[in-house]
Length: 237
Image (cartoon, rainbow, N blue to C red):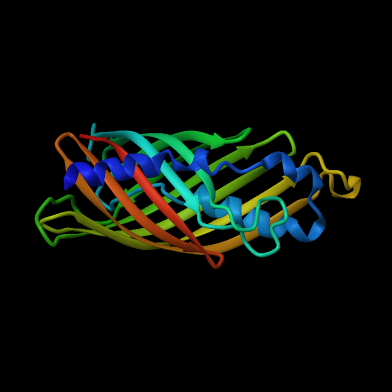
């Protein structure tokens, strides 16, 4: 059963390219489509950043693949196909520092869109692996998504809770995605250089399962009225 679940998560982690978005269509965007598009990009940049509220601890590390897939674009997003899922894959590396502070970097993207991010986390409670112990964590990170037709700057903040159960660790929390989208190229010359700023809440929940030296996780997030599926597969020490 565990092997089947791990295989499913591995498939999920690489599902986004199979549903690749065509960001070159941004060249034909109109003014009304900018804000919905910015919300969709911001939600994906904020998703799948973590799968537990437990700090790594000094010299601990975590590395692996992350995937965030939005089930369909927002209403009014005229850049992406209206009924097609789309998302990002990332490779993420994390390191534990003193005082329950963790740092992380990640990079990825899809279809000519290059994404990079870095952030910090702070564990609000002492580290414990006892069953039913509740961890709490604050997270803050910045991201940049760059394409030849546009780029987006993103700041995300999360409050995350997690609890160890006998079969898995459950997590849940809330976050905020602030995104600034800048138009670089568009058929409508009046849009070139235009900035659109969005700020949207995000809610999420999921579970993480350890497998030998690694783990896999699966979760679901709700942002700007759209569902986002999160997945992770990696090593954690």
